[in-house]
Length: 640
Image (cartoon, rainbow, N blue to C red; front, side, top):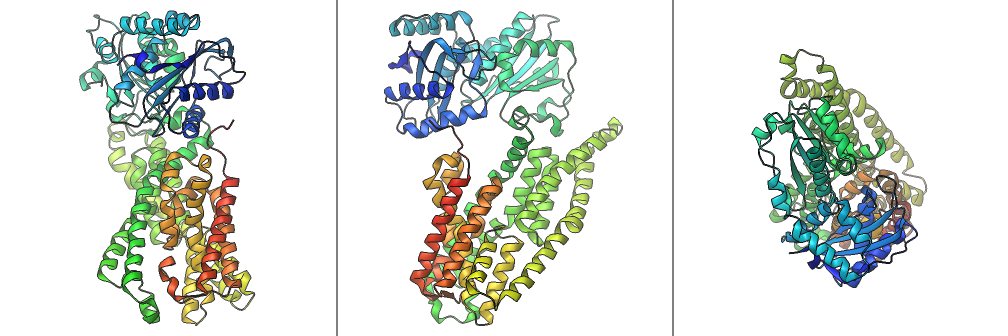
Protein backbone atom coordinates (compact mmCIF):
# COMPACT_ATOMS: atom_id res chain seq x y z
CA UNK A 1 0.00 0.00 0.00
CA UNK A 2 1.21 3.48 -0.89
CA UNK A 3 0.57 6.76 0.91
CA UNK A 4 -1.49 8.03 -2.01
CA UNK A 5 -3.80 5.03 -1.61
CA UNK A 6 -5.01 6.66 1.59
CA UNK A 7 -5.37 10.14 0.08
CA UNK A 8 -8.54 11.08 -1.76
CA UNK A 9 -8.49 14.12 -4.07
CA UNK A 10 -11.73 15.27 -2.45
CA UNK A 11 -9.97 15.35 0.94
CA UNK A 12 -7.14 17.69 -0.08
CA UNK A 13 -7.39 21.47 0.21
CA UNK A 14 -4.55 23.76 -0.86
CA UNK A 15 -6.37 26.97 0.11
CA UNK A 16 -7.26 26.48 3.77
CA UNK A 17 -8.02 29.63 5.75
CA UNK A 18 -8.99 28.54 9.29
CA UNK A 19 -8.81 31.28 11.90
CA UNK A 20 -8.27 28.99 14.89
CA UNK A 21 -7.17 25.51 15.83
CA UNK A 22 -10.76 24.44 16.46
CA UNK A 23 -11.85 25.72 13.06
CA UNK A 24 -8.88 23.95 11.45
CA UNK A 25 -9.81 20.62 13.07
CA UNK A 26 -13.45 20.96 12.05
CA UNK A 27 -12.48 21.77 8.45
CA UNK A 28 -10.12 18.78 8.41
CA UNK A 29 -12.90 16.50 9.65
CA UNK A 30 -15.19 17.84 6.91
CA UNK A 31 -12.47 17.10 4.33
CA UNK A 32 -12.18 13.55 5.65
CA UNK A 33 -15.96 13.09 5.43
CA UNK A 34 -15.76 13.84 1.71
CA UNK A 35 -13.71 10.67 1.21
CA UNK A 36 -16.69 8.63 2.46
CA UNK A 37 -14.55 6.63 4.91
CA UNK A 38 -16.27 7.77 8.11
CA UNK A 39 -19.58 6.28 9.26
CA UNK A 40 -20.15 8.61 12.22
CA UNK A 41 -18.88 12.16 11.77
CA UNK A 42 -19.55 13.33 15.32
CA UNK A 43 -17.93 10.30 16.96
CA UNK A 44 -14.86 10.69 14.76
CA UNK A 45 -14.70 14.41 15.43
CA UNK A 46 -14.91 13.87 19.19
CA UNK A 47 -12.10 11.33 19.06
CA UNK A 48 -9.90 13.77 17.12
CA UNK A 49 -10.56 16.41 19.79
CA UNK A 50 -10.01 13.92 22.61
CA UNK A 51 -6.63 12.97 21.19
CA UNK A 52 -5.76 16.65 20.88
CA UNK A 53 -6.47 17.16 24.57
CA UNK A 54 -3.87 14.53 25.50
CA UNK A 55 -1.14 16.57 23.82
CA UNK A 56 -0.99 18.84 20.83
CA UNK A 57 -0.44 17.22 17.43
CA UNK A 58 1.21 20.41 16.21
CA UNK A 59 4.72 18.93 16.10
CA UNK A 60 6.50 22.13 15.10
CA UNK A 61 8.15 23.32 11.90
CA UNK A 62 4.70 24.36 10.61
CA UNK A 63 3.24 20.81 10.64
CA UNK A 64 0.31 19.21 12.47
CA UNK A 65 -0.86 15.60 12.33
CA UNK A 66 -4.15 15.20 14.23
CA UNK A 67 -5.67 11.74 14.20
CA UNK A 68 -8.61 9.65 15.30
CA UNK A 69 -9.00 5.89 15.53
CA UNK A 70 -12.10 3.84 16.21
CA UNK A 71 -15.10 1.89 14.91
CA UNK A 72 -16.48 5.04 13.28
CA UNK A 73 -13.79 4.67 10.57
CA UNK A 74 -14.71 2.23 7.80
CA UNK A 75 -11.44 2.45 5.87
CA UNK A 76 -8.08 4.07 6.66
CA UNK A 77 -7.66 7.51 5.17
CA UNK A 78 -5.78 10.79 5.06
CA UNK A 79 -6.98 14.36 4.59
CA UNK A 80 -4.58 17.21 3.91
CA UNK A 81 -4.77 20.99 4.09
CA UNK A 82 -2.28 23.70 3.20
CA UNK A 83 -2.77 26.93 5.17
CA UNK A 84 -0.77 29.58 3.33
CA UNK A 85 -1.05 32.22 6.05
CA UNK A 86 -0.69 29.72 8.90
CA UNK A 87 -2.92 29.05 11.91
CA UNK A 88 -2.18 28.97 15.63
CA UNK A 89 -2.26 25.25 16.52
CA UNK A 90 -0.64 25.27 19.99
CA UNK A 91 2.41 23.75 18.34
CA UNK A 92 5.37 22.53 20.36
CA UNK A 93 7.55 25.32 18.98
CA UNK A 94 4.83 27.97 19.23
CA UNK A 95 4.95 28.62 15.49
CA UNK A 96 1.86 28.69 13.24
CA UNK A 97 0.96 25.59 11.24
CA UNK A 98 0.98 25.65 7.43
CA UNK A 99 0.52 21.94 6.64
CA UNK A 100 -2.05 19.66 8.29
CA UNK A 101 -2.53 15.93 7.71
CA UNK A 102 -5.54 14.31 9.41
CA UNK A 103 -5.43 10.55 9.92
CA UNK A 104 -8.40 8.21 10.16
CA UNK A 105 -7.61 4.68 11.34
CA UNK A 106 -10.13 1.85 11.83
CA UNK A 107 -10.11 -0.83 14.52
CA UNK A 108 -9.06 -3.73 12.30
CA UNK A 109 -6.69 -6.66 12.63
CA UNK A 110 -5.18 -5.79 9.25
CA UNK A 111 -2.80 -2.98 10.18
CA UNK A 112 -0.97 -2.62 6.87
CA UNK A 113 -2.14 1.00 6.70
CA UNK A 114 -0.27 1.78 9.94
CA UNK A 115 3.10 1.27 8.26
CA UNK A 116 2.01 3.64 5.50
CA UNK A 117 0.91 6.29 7.99
CA UNK A 118 4.11 5.81 9.94
CA UNK A 119 6.14 6.30 6.76
CA UNK A 120 4.31 9.56 6.05
CA UNK A 121 5.09 10.72 9.59
CA UNK A 122 8.77 10.08 8.99
CA UNK A 123 8.67 11.81 5.61
CA UNK A 124 7.25 14.94 7.22
CA UNK A 125 10.40 15.21 9.31
CA UNK A 126 12.17 16.07 6.04
CA UNK A 127 11.96 19.85 5.67
CA UNK A 128 12.35 19.67 1.88
CA UNK A 129 9.39 17.31 1.52
CA UNK A 130 7.11 19.39 3.75
CA UNK A 131 8.14 22.62 2.01
CA UNK A 132 7.35 21.14 -1.42
CA UNK A 133 3.87 20.19 -0.27
CA UNK A 134 3.21 23.67 1.09
CA UNK A 135 4.00 25.19 -2.32
CA UNK A 136 2.09 22.70 -4.49
CA UNK A 137 -0.13 24.60 -6.93
CA UNK A 138 -2.60 21.78 -7.70
CA UNK A 139 -3.95 18.70 -5.99
CA UNK A 140 -2.34 16.57 -8.71
CA UNK A 141 1.08 18.13 -8.02
CA UNK A 142 0.55 17.54 -4.29
CA UNK A 143 -0.08 13.84 -4.91
CA UNK A 144 2.91 13.59 -7.27
CA UNK A 145 5.22 15.03 -4.60
CA UNK A 146 3.93 12.45 -2.10
CA UNK A 147 4.32 9.62 -4.62
CA UNK A 148 7.88 10.60 -5.48
CA UNK A 149 8.93 10.75 -1.83
CA UNK A 150 7.20 7.43 -1.20
CA UNK A 151 9.37 5.86 -3.91
CA UNK A 152 12.60 7.33 -2.57
CA UNK A 153 12.02 6.56 1.12
CA UNK A 154 12.50 2.93 2.25
CA UNK A 155 9.59 1.08 3.81
CA UNK A 156 9.19 1.47 7.56
CA UNK A 157 10.54 -2.00 8.36
CA UNK A 158 13.54 -1.42 6.10
CA UNK A 159 14.22 1.91 7.79
CA UNK A 160 14.16 0.30 11.21
CA UNK A 161 16.31 -2.60 10.08
CA UNK A 162 18.85 -0.16 8.62
CA UNK A 163 19.50 1.13 12.14
CA UNK A 164 20.94 -2.25 13.10
CA UNK A 165 24.11 -1.89 11.08
CA UNK A 166 27.31 -2.48 13.00
CA UNK A 167 28.35 0.50 15.07
CA UNK A 168 31.60 2.23 14.21
CA UNK A 169 34.40 1.25 16.57
CA UNK A 170 34.28 3.53 19.61
CA UNK A 171 31.04 5.25 18.58
CA UNK A 172 28.70 6.29 21.39
CA UNK A 173 25.82 3.76 21.48
CA UNK A 174 22.30 5.01 22.12
CA UNK A 175 19.17 2.88 22.31
CA UNK A 176 15.74 4.49 22.27
CA UNK A 177 12.09 3.58 22.68
CA UNK A 178 9.29 5.75 21.31
CA UNK A 179 5.57 5.35 21.97
CA UNK A 180 2.45 7.51 22.04
CA UNK A 181 -1.08 6.63 23.24
CA UNK A 182 -2.50 6.28 19.73
CA UNK A 183 0.66 4.82 18.23
CA UNK A 184 0.11 6.17 14.74
CA UNK A 185 2.18 9.28 14.04
CA UNK A 186 4.17 10.65 16.97
CA UNK A 187 5.79 7.29 17.75
CA UNK A 188 7.51 7.19 14.36
CA UNK A 189 8.21 10.91 14.08
CA UNK A 190 10.06 10.74 17.39
CA UNK A 191 12.01 7.74 16.09
CA UNK A 192 12.96 9.64 12.95
CA UNK A 193 13.91 12.73 14.93
CA UNK A 194 16.17 10.81 17.30
CA UNK A 195 17.79 8.89 14.47
CA UNK A 196 18.61 12.11 12.56
CA UNK A 197 19.98 13.79 15.67
CA UNK A 198 22.16 10.79 16.57
CA UNK A 199 23.47 10.48 13.03
CA UNK A 200 24.39 14.18 13.03
CA UNK A 201 26.25 13.69 16.33
CA UNK A 202 28.16 10.67 15.01
CA UNK A 203 26.40 8.21 17.35
CA UNK A 204 25.10 4.72 16.76
CA UNK A 205 21.38 4.48 17.53
CA UNK A 206 18.67 1.86 17.40
CA UNK A 207 15.06 2.85 18.06
CA UNK A 208 12.33 0.49 19.19
CA UNK A 209 8.90 1.77 18.13
CA UNK A 210 5.82 0.73 20.06
CA UNK A 211 2.91 1.80 17.88
CA UNK A 212 -0.55 0.52 17.05
CA UNK A 213 0.99 -2.23 14.92
CA UNK A 214 2.93 -3.55 17.93
CA UNK A 215 6.57 -3.29 18.98
CA UNK A 216 9.06 -3.19 16.10
CA UNK A 217 12.84 -3.21 16.01
CA UNK A 218 12.76 -4.59 19.56
CA UNK A 219 15.92 -4.05 21.58
CA UNK A 220 17.81 -7.23 22.48
CA UNK A 221 19.35 -8.02 25.85
CA UNK A 222 22.84 -7.85 24.36
CA UNK A 223 22.19 -4.45 22.78
CA UNK A 224 20.91 -3.15 26.11
CA UNK A 225 23.99 -4.45 27.91
CA UNK A 226 26.31 -2.75 25.40
CA UNK A 227 24.43 0.57 25.23
CA UNK A 228 25.95 3.72 26.69
CA UNK A 229 22.57 5.37 27.25
CA UNK A 230 18.85 4.68 26.81
CA UNK A 231 16.28 7.29 25.74
CA UNK A 232 12.61 6.51 26.41
CA UNK A 233 10.40 9.08 24.67
CA UNK A 234 6.93 7.84 25.54
CA UNK A 235 3.48 8.93 26.63
CA UNK A 236 2.35 5.31 26.97
CA UNK A 237 3.48 2.45 29.19
CA UNK A 238 6.81 0.94 28.17
CA UNK A 239 8.42 -2.26 29.64
CA UNK A 240 11.16 -0.80 31.80
CA UNK A 241 12.62 -3.57 33.97
CA UNK A 242 14.98 -4.60 31.16
CA UNK A 243 16.82 -1.26 31.53
CA UNK A 244 17.79 -1.83 35.18
CA UNK A 245 21.24 -0.43 35.91
CA UNK A 246 21.52 1.55 32.65
CA UNK A 247 21.77 5.31 32.24
CA UNK A 248 18.34 6.33 31.07
CA UNK A 249 16.58 9.54 29.96
CA UNK A 250 12.79 9.71 30.11
CA UNK A 251 10.70 12.31 28.34
CA UNK A 252 7.49 12.92 26.44
CA UNK A 253 7.25 11.50 22.94
CA UNK A 254 6.95 15.08 21.66
CA UNK A 255 10.45 15.80 23.01
CA UNK A 256 11.76 13.10 20.69
CA UNK A 257 10.40 15.19 17.83
CA UNK A 258 11.19 18.75 18.88
CA UNK A 259 14.15 18.26 21.24
CA UNK A 260 15.95 15.28 19.71
CA UNK A 261 19.26 17.18 19.43
CA UNK A 262 19.13 18.12 23.12
CA UNK A 263 18.32 14.55 24.17
CA UNK A 264 21.24 13.11 22.20
CA UNK A 265 23.57 15.79 23.56
CA UNK A 266 22.48 15.02 27.12
CA UNK A 267 22.95 11.31 26.56
CA UNK A 268 26.51 11.88 25.32
CA UNK A 269 27.32 14.21 28.22
CA UNK A 270 26.96 11.34 30.69
CA UNK A 271 24.92 13.49 33.08
CA UNK A 272 22.10 10.94 33.16
CA UNK A 273 20.61 9.04 36.15
CA UNK A 274 20.90 5.26 36.38
CA UNK A 275 17.54 3.52 36.15
CA UNK A 276 16.59 1.16 38.98
CA UNK A 277 13.90 -1.41 38.19
CA UNK A 278 11.00 -1.15 40.60
CA UNK A 279 11.76 2.52 41.25
CA UNK A 280 8.53 4.32 40.43
CA UNK A 281 10.27 7.65 40.22
CA UNK A 282 11.73 6.29 37.01
CA UNK A 283 8.67 4.48 35.69
CA UNK A 284 7.84 5.48 32.16
CA UNK A 285 4.25 6.34 31.46
CA UNK A 286 1.95 9.14 30.53
CA UNK A 287 1.59 9.93 34.22
CA UNK A 288 5.03 11.43 34.25
CA UNK A 289 4.92 12.75 30.74
CA UNK A 290 2.12 15.22 31.03
CA UNK A 291 -0.07 17.19 33.38
CA UNK A 292 0.29 18.48 36.91
CA UNK A 293 -0.42 16.85 40.23
CA UNK A 294 -4.17 16.71 39.57
CA UNK A 295 -3.67 14.87 36.30
CA UNK A 296 -1.25 12.44 37.94
CA UNK A 297 -3.69 11.66 40.75
CA UNK A 298 -6.44 11.12 38.19
CA UNK A 299 -4.29 8.74 36.14
CA UNK A 300 -3.33 6.81 39.28
CA UNK A 301 -7.00 6.56 40.23
CA UNK A 302 -8.00 5.42 36.75
CA UNK A 303 -5.34 2.70 36.84
CA UNK A 304 -7.29 1.18 39.73
CA UNK A 305 -10.72 1.79 38.23
CA UNK A 306 -9.90 0.27 34.84
CA UNK A 307 -8.54 -2.92 36.44
CA UNK A 308 -11.52 -3.15 38.79
CA UNK A 309 -14.15 -2.77 36.05
CA UNK A 310 -14.10 -6.38 34.74
CA UNK A 311 -14.77 -7.71 38.24
CA UNK A 312 -17.71 -5.33 38.67
CA UNK A 313 -19.25 -6.13 35.29
CA UNK A 314 -18.67 -9.90 35.33
CA UNK A 315 -19.63 -10.42 38.95
CA UNK A 316 -22.58 -8.03 38.78
CA UNK A 317 -24.16 -9.68 35.77
CA UNK A 318 -23.79 -13.14 37.33
CA UNK A 319 -25.53 -11.95 40.50
CA UNK A 320 -28.28 -10.34 38.40
CA UNK A 321 -28.77 -13.65 36.57
CA UNK A 322 -29.06 -15.41 39.94
CA UNK A 323 -31.90 -13.08 40.94
CA UNK A 324 -33.54 -13.58 37.56
CA UNK A 325 -33.47 -17.37 37.90
CA UNK A 326 -34.99 -17.26 41.39
CA UNK A 327 -37.55 -14.72 40.19
CA UNK A 328 -38.65 -17.03 37.39
CA UNK A 329 -38.58 -20.26 39.40
CA UNK A 330 -39.92 -19.19 42.77
CA UNK A 331 -43.20 -17.59 43.89
CA UNK A 332 -41.86 -14.81 46.06
CA UNK A 333 -45.28 -14.15 47.63
CA UNK A 334 -45.37 -17.70 48.97
CA UNK A 335 -42.01 -17.44 50.72
CA UNK A 336 -41.52 -16.86 54.41
CA UNK A 337 -39.61 -13.80 55.59
CA UNK A 338 -36.58 -15.99 56.26
CA UNK A 339 -36.70 -17.51 52.76
CA UNK A 340 -37.01 -14.08 51.17
CA UNK A 341 -33.76 -13.04 52.80
CA UNK A 342 -32.07 -15.83 50.82
CA UNK A 343 -33.50 -14.65 47.50
CA UNK A 344 -30.90 -15.17 44.78
CA UNK A 345 -29.62 -18.42 46.30
CA UNK A 346 -32.85 -20.43 46.63
CA UNK A 347 -32.50 -22.58 43.50
CA UNK A 348 -29.22 -24.49 42.92
CA UNK A 349 -28.48 -22.70 39.63
CA UNK A 350 -29.04 -19.30 41.22
CA UNK A 351 -26.91 -20.21 44.22
CA UNK A 352 -24.04 -21.25 41.93
CA UNK A 353 -24.14 -18.02 39.92
CA UNK A 354 -24.53 -15.90 43.04
CA UNK A 355 -21.55 -17.62 44.66
CA UNK A 356 -19.31 -17.00 41.62
CA UNK A 357 -20.51 -13.39 41.37
CA UNK A 358 -19.83 -12.79 45.06
CA UNK A 359 -16.27 -14.10 44.63
CA UNK A 360 -15.69 -11.65 41.76
CA UNK A 361 -17.10 -8.83 43.87
CA UNK A 362 -14.81 -9.87 46.71
CA UNK A 363 -11.82 -8.97 44.53
CA UNK A 364 -13.25 -5.60 43.56
CA UNK A 365 -11.96 -3.36 46.33
CA UNK A 366 -8.55 -5.05 46.72
CA UNK A 367 -8.05 -4.71 42.95
CA UNK A 368 -9.03 -1.03 43.09
CA UNK A 369 -6.61 -0.25 45.91
CA UNK A 370 -3.82 -2.47 44.58
CA UNK A 371 -3.71 -0.95 41.11
CA UNK A 372 -4.05 2.61 42.39
CA UNK A 373 -0.96 1.88 44.47
CA UNK A 374 0.76 0.29 41.47
CA UNK A 375 -0.01 3.39 39.42
CA UNK A 376 1.90 5.41 42.02
CA UNK A 377 4.72 3.10 43.08
CA UNK A 378 4.89 0.57 40.25
CA UNK A 379 5.04 -3.14 41.18
CA UNK A 380 6.29 -2.66 44.78
CA UNK A 381 3.02 -0.90 45.57
CA UNK A 382 0.75 -3.68 44.30
CA UNK A 383 0.90 -6.05 47.28
CA UNK A 384 0.66 -3.23 49.81
CA UNK A 385 -2.39 -1.80 48.05
CA UNK A 386 -4.04 -5.23 47.85
CA UNK A 387 -3.70 -5.70 51.60
CA UNK A 388 -5.16 -2.26 52.31
CA UNK A 389 -8.06 -2.88 49.93
CA UNK A 390 -8.78 -6.28 51.46
CA UNK A 391 -8.85 -4.77 54.96
CA UNK A 392 -11.26 -2.09 53.73
CA UNK A 393 -13.45 -4.77 52.15
CA UNK A 394 -13.47 -6.96 55.25
CA UNK A 395 -13.90 -4.03 57.62
CA UNK A 396 -16.36 -1.16 57.78
CA UNK A 397 -14.72 1.38 55.48
CA UNK A 398 -15.71 -0.24 52.15
CA UNK A 399 -15.32 1.68 48.91
CA UNK A 400 -14.09 4.90 50.51
CA UNK A 401 -11.59 2.99 52.61
CA UNK A 402 -10.26 1.17 49.55
CA UNK A 403 -9.76 4.48 47.73
CA UNK A 404 -7.83 5.82 50.68
CA UNK A 405 -5.87 2.57 50.99
CA UNK A 406 -4.74 2.72 47.36
CA UNK A 407 -3.28 6.20 47.64
CA UNK A 408 -1.84 5.62 51.11
CA UNK A 409 -0.17 2.39 49.95
CA UNK A 410 1.34 4.00 46.85
CA UNK A 411 2.88 6.94 48.64
CA UNK A 412 3.91 4.79 51.58
CA UNK A 413 5.97 2.64 49.21
CA UNK A 414 7.47 5.75 47.61
CA UNK A 415 8.53 6.84 51.09
CA UNK A 416 10.05 3.43 51.82
CA UNK A 417 11.97 3.49 48.54
CA UNK A 418 13.44 6.84 49.45
CA UNK A 419 14.38 5.63 52.94
CA UNK A 420 15.93 2.36 51.77
CA UNK A 421 17.89 4.07 48.99
CA UNK A 422 20.36 5.14 51.69
CA UNK A 423 21.18 1.54 52.61
CA UNK A 424 24.39 -0.15 51.43
CA UNK A 425 24.12 -1.40 47.85
CA UNK A 426 24.26 -5.08 48.87
CA UNK A 427 21.21 -4.65 51.11
CA UNK A 428 19.41 -2.30 48.71
CA UNK A 429 19.27 -5.08 46.11
CA UNK A 430 16.95 -7.17 48.30
CA UNK A 431 14.65 -4.24 49.08
CA UNK A 432 12.12 -4.90 46.25
CA UNK A 433 11.61 -8.55 47.26
CA UNK A 434 11.91 -8.26 51.04
CA UNK A 435 11.93 -4.79 52.57
CA UNK A 436 9.23 -3.09 50.48
CA UNK A 437 6.58 -5.81 50.93
CA UNK A 438 7.46 -6.55 54.55
CA UNK A 439 7.51 -2.98 55.82
CA UNK A 440 4.85 -1.80 53.41
CA UNK A 441 2.29 -4.43 54.38
CA UNK A 442 3.04 -3.99 58.08
CA UNK A 443 2.62 -0.21 58.02
CA UNK A 444 -0.39 -0.45 55.71
CA UNK A 445 -2.12 -2.85 58.08
CA UNK A 446 -1.44 -0.61 61.07
CA UNK A 447 -2.65 2.49 59.24
CA UNK A 448 -5.87 0.81 58.13
CA UNK A 449 -6.55 -0.72 61.54
CA UNK A 450 -5.82 2.32 63.68
CA UNK A 451 -6.29 5.36 61.41
CA UNK A 452 -8.79 4.49 58.66
CA UNK A 453 -11.22 1.94 60.09
CA UNK A 454 -11.96 3.51 63.53
CA UNK A 455 -13.33 6.86 62.33
CA UNK A 456 -15.41 5.30 59.56
CA UNK A 457 -16.63 2.60 61.94
CA UNK A 458 -17.68 5.26 64.45
CA UNK A 459 -19.43 7.13 61.65
CA UNK A 460 -21.27 3.96 60.69
CA UNK A 461 -22.49 3.45 64.25
CA UNK A 462 -23.63 7.06 64.45
CA UNK A 463 -25.56 6.68 61.22
CA UNK A 464 -27.37 3.59 62.46
CA UNK A 465 -28.29 5.40 65.66
CA UNK A 466 -29.51 8.45 63.74
CA UNK A 467 -31.64 6.32 61.44
CA UNK A 468 -33.19 4.46 64.34
CA UNK A 469 -34.11 7.74 65.99
CA UNK A 470 -35.70 8.94 62.74
CA UNK A 471 -38.06 5.99 62.56
CA UNK A 472 -41.02 7.88 63.91
CA UNK A 473 -40.46 11.16 62.06
CA UNK A 474 -41.65 12.29 58.66
CA UNK A 475 -41.96 9.34 56.29
CA UNK A 476 -40.90 11.32 53.20
CA UNK A 477 -37.89 12.81 54.97
CA UNK A 478 -36.87 9.33 56.09
CA UNK A 479 -37.20 8.11 52.48
CA UNK A 480 -34.94 10.92 51.28
CA UNK A 481 -32.30 10.11 53.91
CA UNK A 482 -32.13 6.32 53.53
CA UNK A 483 -32.32 6.39 49.72
CA UNK A 484 -29.72 9.15 49.51
CA UNK A 485 -27.41 7.22 51.83
CA UNK A 486 -27.53 4.24 49.47
CA UNK A 487 -25.81 6.40 46.84
CA UNK A 488 -23.17 8.05 48.99
CA UNK A 489 -20.51 5.33 48.90
CA UNK A 490 -21.92 2.52 46.73
CA UNK A 491 -21.72 -0.39 49.18
CA UNK A 492 -19.65 1.36 51.85
CA UNK A 493 -20.60 2.17 55.45
CA UNK A 494 -23.27 4.76 54.57
CA UNK A 495 -24.87 2.34 52.12
CA UNK A 496 -24.67 -0.58 54.54
CA UNK A 497 -26.08 1.45 57.42
CA UNK A 498 -29.16 2.34 55.38
CA UNK A 499 -29.51 -1.23 54.12
CA UNK A 500 -29.25 -2.78 57.58
CA UNK A 501 -31.83 -0.30 58.83
CA UNK A 502 -34.13 -1.29 55.95
CA UNK A 503 -33.82 -5.03 56.58
CA UNK A 504 -34.31 -4.54 60.32
CA UNK A 505 -37.50 -2.60 59.54
CA UNK A 506 -38.87 -5.61 57.64
CA UNK A 507 -38.51 -7.72 60.77
CA UNK A 508 -40.37 -5.01 62.68
CA UNK A 509 -43.20 -5.06 60.14
CA UNK A 510 -42.37 -1.67 58.51
CA UNK A 511 -42.11 -2.38 54.78
CA UNK A 512 -42.04 1.23 53.52
CA UNK A 513 -38.43 1.80 54.56
CA UNK A 514 -37.04 -1.21 52.68
CA UNK A 515 -38.81 -0.04 49.52
CA UNK A 516 -37.08 3.36 49.78
CA UNK A 517 -33.75 1.72 50.56
CA UNK A 518 -33.84 -0.58 47.54
CA UNK A 519 -34.97 2.09 45.10
CA UNK A 520 -32.16 4.31 46.41
CA UNK A 521 -29.66 1.57 45.57
CA UNK A 522 -31.14 0.95 42.12
CA UNK A 523 -31.00 4.56 40.92
CA UNK A 524 -27.20 5.22 40.77
CA UNK A 525 -26.30 2.50 38.22
CA UNK A 526 -29.44 3.19 36.19
CA UNK A 527 -28.82 6.95 36.20
CA UNK A 528 -25.23 6.45 35.07
CA UNK A 529 -26.29 4.05 32.32
CA UNK A 530 -28.87 6.55 31.07
CA UNK A 531 -26.39 9.42 31.24
CA UNK A 532 -23.87 7.53 29.09
CA UNK A 533 -26.58 7.26 26.41
CA UNK A 534 -27.89 10.83 26.66
CA UNK A 535 -24.61 12.68 27.25
CA UNK A 536 -22.02 10.72 25.30
CA UNK A 537 -19.54 13.61 25.14
CA UNK A 538 -19.22 13.54 28.96
CA UNK A 539 -17.82 10.02 29.06
CA UNK A 540 -14.77 8.23 27.70
CA UNK A 541 -15.13 5.53 25.09
CA UNK A 542 -14.61 2.82 27.73
CA UNK A 543 -17.27 4.36 29.96
CA UNK A 544 -19.76 4.64 27.08
CA UNK A 545 -19.24 0.97 26.22
CA UNK A 546 -19.61 -0.29 29.80
CA UNK A 547 -22.32 2.18 30.84
CA UNK A 548 -25.42 0.30 29.57
CA UNK A 549 -24.40 -2.76 31.61
CA UNK A 550 -25.33 -0.68 34.66
CA UNK A 551 -29.00 -0.95 33.68
CA UNK A 552 -28.77 -4.68 34.41
CA UNK A 553 -26.97 -4.19 37.71
CA UNK A 554 -29.15 -1.28 38.77
CA UNK A 555 -32.38 -3.13 38.10
CA UNK A 556 -30.96 -6.06 40.07
CA UNK A 557 -30.21 -3.74 43.05
CA UNK A 558 -26.43 -3.97 42.60
CA UNK A 559 -25.35 -0.44 43.47
CA UNK A 560 -21.68 -1.39 43.14
CA UNK A 561 -22.02 -1.19 39.35
CA UNK A 562 -21.68 2.57 39.76
CA UNK A 563 -18.36 2.36 41.62
CA UNK A 564 -16.01 2.69 38.60
CA UNK A 565 -17.79 5.86 37.50
CA UNK A 566 -17.93 7.26 41.02
CA UNK A 567 -14.27 6.48 41.59
CA UNK A 568 -13.17 8.27 38.41
CA UNK A 569 -15.20 11.43 39.08
CA UNK A 570 -16.64 11.40 42.62
CA UNK A 571 -17.29 15.15 42.85
CA UNK A 572 -19.79 15.00 39.99
CA UNK A 573 -21.10 11.43 40.07
CA UNK A 574 -21.87 11.08 43.78
CA UNK A 575 -23.97 14.28 44.22
CA UNK A 576 -25.97 13.50 41.05
CA UNK A 577 -26.69 9.95 42.18
CA UNK A 578 -27.52 11.03 45.73
CA UNK A 579 -30.11 13.56 44.52
CA UNK A 580 -31.61 11.05 42.08
CA UNK A 581 -31.81 8.38 44.80
CA UNK A 582 -33.26 10.83 47.32
CA UNK A 583 -35.99 11.89 44.86
CA UNK A 584 -36.85 8.25 44.16
CA UNK A 585 -36.91 7.43 47.90
CA UNK A 586 -39.16 10.39 48.67
CA UNK A 587 -41.58 9.40 45.90
CA UNK A 588 -41.59 5.78 47.06
CA UNK A 589 -42.65 6.94 50.51
CA UNK A 590 -45.15 9.44 49.12
CA UNK A 591 -46.77 6.77 46.94
CA UNK A 592 -47.03 4.40 49.88
CA UNK A 593 -44.88 1.70 48.28
CA UNK A 594 -43.85 -1.27 50.41
CA UNK A 595 -41.35 -4.12 50.03
CA UNK A 596 -41.07 -7.34 52.02
CA UNK A 597 -37.92 -8.73 50.31
CA UNK A 598 -34.48 -7.43 51.31
CA UNK A 599 -32.93 -7.85 47.86
CA UNK A 600 -33.64 -8.63 44.22
CA UNK A 601 -34.47 -5.32 42.59
CA UNK A 602 -36.81 -5.56 39.64
CA UNK A 603 -37.08 -9.33 40.13
CA UNK A 604 -39.08 -8.96 43.37
CA UNK A 605 -41.60 -6.47 41.98
CA UNK A 606 -44.38 -9.04 42.60
CA UNK A 607 -44.02 -8.42 46.36
CA UNK A 608 -43.85 -4.62 46.05
CA UNK A 609 -46.91 -2.79 47.30
CA UNK A 610 -48.17 -0.27 44.70
CA UNK A 611 -45.71 -1.66 42.14
CA UNK A 612 -46.69 0.66 39.26
CA UNK A 613 -45.99 3.82 41.23
CA UNK A 614 -42.77 2.23 42.51
CA UNK A 615 -41.56 1.83 38.93
CA UNK A 616 -42.57 5.42 38.17
CA UNK A 617 -40.57 6.61 41.19
CA UNK A 618 -37.57 4.62 39.92
CA UNK A 619 -37.85 6.15 36.45
CA UNK A 620 -38.15 9.70 37.80
CA UNK A 621 -35.18 9.25 40.14
CA UNK A 622 -33.12 7.75 37.32
CA UNK A 623 -33.91 10.62 34.95
CA UNK A 624 -33.15 13.24 37.62
CA UNK A 625 -29.80 11.61 38.42
CA UNK A 626 -28.87 11.24 34.74
CA UNK A 627 -29.74 14.83 33.86
CA UNK A 628 -27.81 16.19 36.83
CA UNK A 629 -24.82 14.02 35.97
CA UNK A 630 -24.89 15.18 32.36
CA UNK A 631 -25.06 18.78 33.55
CA UNK A 632 -22.31 18.49 36.16
CA UNK A 633 -19.72 16.50 34.23
CA UNK A 634 -17.40 18.35 31.89
CA UNK A 635 -17.25 17.53 28.21
CA UNK A 636 -14.32 15.29 27.39
CA UNK A 637 -13.77 16.92 23.99
CA UNK A 638 -13.99 20.44 22.59
CA UNK A 639 -17.21 21.39 20.91
CA UNK A 640 -17.83 23.57 17.84
